[in-house]
Length: 399
Image 1 (cartoon, rainbow, N blue to C red):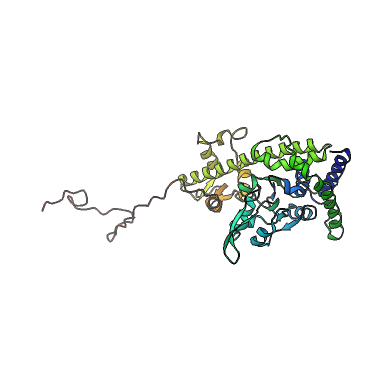
Image 2: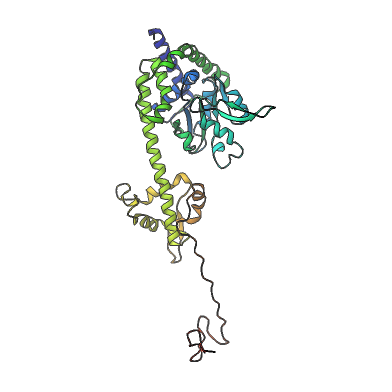
């Protein structure tokens, strides 16, 4: 690589990084580096072995997910928005020089409202690795036809996407902007030409280097699937030179470690939901005081709750762990007339159903209730007095 090529690459990446940060507030400098390199990697897709996904997720609307897709649409190689695109169209568009798929509202593809989008779901899962075609019966002769699936894709949605996507993605966990964080409004008249000029500069720099990129085997700071996902980004950084290789590897380490911690937290939250179901099932109550629920959770010697945090799981911890599921405590007045913070059983039902958390105690059919007819003049709740030698415990006469 010549000095001019290296310097040109640094300049182009610096310009791209500045343009992205101009319109979108990303969660960290490492995330900004990752997005910059991911956009550049779309321009060498034909020589890649893996097509990393960019998972742009946030807890609510208004976190900048769609705005980031607007910026990506004007900078990536051959952008193709798929929010309303037929899967059949996508199958036929992907070829030797694949587009970059941009999927907004991705939670509608993978969530309970997915409906008839299984083909698109399968394509997004399969397209992470090259030479993984999808076979379909097609044409007037109804013959099996192989459709390529390999294409880089950015998917934006509320909440985490399925593990099959997240494990193959550079994950951006977007948040709403703080009051002091300012961005430049995105205006098509001025913003699109600026970003398109950067896309042209990326193509002019990288397309002649595709042969070099194909031969490059960069040293990776991670292993296995994470290495597959991040290798195209580190390859771009190596092609550019300058400070970019170090920044790329630092971003790779920081963001993959963050996702490991996030996975551990998610696993812990699912464990908590299961344990809370167990407590409710055993209590047989529709409402549990927060302190009673915490005490019951801490009694399980095999659970992590007694040692959670500094002094065990407390009400604050419990609220934080349940908040992503939309579950919170509320004031409740109990039969003894006292009011206390409590969790209601009905707030958990939807989440338990979504995560497949079954009852821990099987339903046992209750014995029928026997209604005793009271004799005239008897007080309610008293049993009739039978003559001596009669009743169910009396000796039966032998016939």
